Image (cartoon, rainbow, N blue to C red):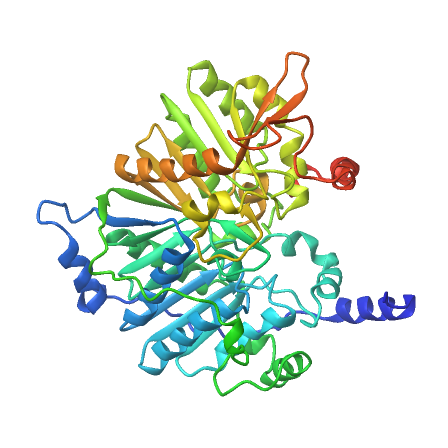
Length: 517
């Protein structure tokens, strides 16, 4: 039932009166000084072959949901001193509850845990993750928070419209680091859909596990955000009593230290054991870290935007291509700078392939609208465009989603760039103007033909099993070509969509400028 007009007005008025706390105490802390003294640091040293230089780092792709969960669980269980966790979204799902139980166990054995979470999605049930701040040994901060009640995200967002320029900037970084010795970077948030345990839609995603000196740079980036004036300790934003009232409105009383009451056994997902880090093969290679400054999310005194280092760095990397570029971006909205670069690369004879979501598979309709308005221009330039098929879940079972997944559809979420089959970048960034102008991002750039080949093979598996190839006919019409043995083979409109969804996309197109996507 819709609220009465007076109730809506009252809610907006109350939300508009809310404000962020002043004079917040933020004790400064930093990553572990001597990771080499920890068991994880010593393990990384033992795994380094004698002939490998000290400045190279070891890497392993986590291309399946099982490996992604198992890798994070291994870092949590083997952390001896510190655990740093930074995400855009942490959903209070059964899989996450299981992982957070391991985090609490780490804190109980003396590990200092720091959790930094973007504040935008911490409403309703997902607000319960903030109860981690009450666990002894765990510190938790919310980045760029919105004031107001967390019982409903809509009212909170509406109440912050007067501060729209600030609240549209979000911390999109994603990392998981243990003892400043091993870390994970990639596109995944924490939730069932990212670990193959959802029942509705799973995300096709990829992470990279890193060990060695590059991890210290990852930790340094975490420290910059943790100690930023935009990072608010949970206790300054919501009281334990308020969290309890929010929880009691929806859930039974949990046990001490639980984020939520444990789910019944029938709901518990089948989760893999921790990854065996000692047995895991690592590829040793030079690597760099691209990370935006937290200042990118703060209003500049002169009103000028702070340019993002990640997208600028990736555009520079793309500019070095001589033969081949493969881009995987679930939200792909090229701005003028990117289109100009694509034109230059095609003039040099560089092959350009892009895998992105289809209208049916995307979880962000507005971003898809932004991509669609550039689709014909991209094809005229000579780019090869592929769009994932939402209903191809069974064809992806043995490639990237895992045979245990119960999801009925798949959505692309991987953020990956491969240049000339020798350099790959993997991280939190999309190739769109939101990542360039609005969000903060992080990405690893690794120079390794072996890892680049492994990642490219994984992408090709998705293209072969579950992607439409988009082409232009001689009369400038779009056609979607399905993989072999799929029916229908050719479609003349956004496939697997209703007439209503296609109409809605056209209706909203004039209202969605690229800069906001």
